[in-house]
Image (cartoon, rainbow, N blue to C red; front, top):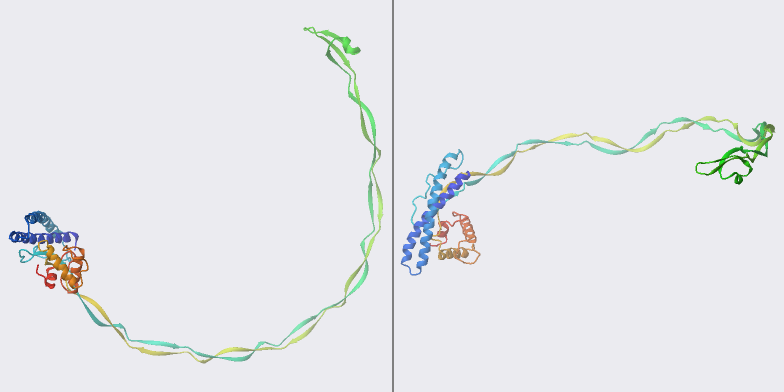
Amino acid sequence: MNKIYLRALAIMAGAAIAGGCSTMAAETSSVSASSSSITAADLEASQQRISELESALAAKDRDLANAEARIGESSTAGSMTADASLFPPNPKAGQCYARVLIPAKYQTVSENVLKRDAAERIEIIPARYETVEENVLVKEASSTLEVVPAVYGEVQERVLVKPASQKIVEVPAVYETVKEQVLDKPAHTAWKKGPAARQSANVLSESTTDTGEIMCLVEIPATYKTIEKRVLVTPAQTDTIEIPAEYKTVTKTVVKQPATTREVMIPAKYETVTVTKLVSPANESRTTIPAEYQTVTRTNKTTDERMEWRQVMCEVNMTRDNVLALQKALADKGYYKAGLDGVIGGQTLSAARQYAIDKNLPAGSNYVPIEVVKSLDLSL
């Protein structure tokens, strides 16, 4: 069922309830005029409420017309068909109705069906073996050649370690140190300031500069220094030295008797081992397995879901006294656990719904069907 269809159903249910409530409100107001327990303020509030409901009804009528047009366009094969009538059949004044969806009904049936076909089970009976002990040949008799090692002895012998030789020794040269005087700086001339009287007798010439200074050309004598010099006295030479041969006594191991071989016989070797012998070969056993059946339970749909008009409690007959009576009746049956306040709330609706389900009566989550009221022996 698409969203447009559900919205249309809600609008139609609201319209029907509002229509029944407005009619009932009109009758109630006429009856209340003669009742001394209803004040003028209550009557005025009821009239105002009726006006609000009529305005809401007009708006829902417009929405209903639009919804009907959309339902005709969006309906598809296989979806649930809406009721031909958009209003409750044979409505009565002072009664409220709700268009509700009646879910499909299902029936659970059991059937004995074949679970497994008859078959044949083949069992393999394994071969049977037994364990016995046997004396078996592990290694045959054989022969092998055994080596008789050589016999050795020790002897002493004088052996040449190093033969005689000659050694050439170098005799180094002999030098001595002598002193000798050599020229350090040769004689030369130099210009010096001052008169010739101050420069001693080595003055060669004298001149005066533009500034009036006296310059003398002085002869400077040569200077000498004493140096030490190493001179060869005896040149280097070589000398030949005779080196005698070297000998030593060593102990040497020699073969007194060479190695030989001999044939040695090795006897056969036996061991007691555990072996597995076949007693009876493998074979097969065939067993017939009968067919197996089981009982399966399936759910069959007996009726399709449908829309249905139901008479419900509404604001007209949902007075405080009526709600108190409903709450008390439900409490007496053990369904209503809260305090009696005369207000239709979630706990009252939940208790009425659970009572309806237990009694297999029409049930709703946000309304109280009249069948529940009648089952509780209430007259609202």
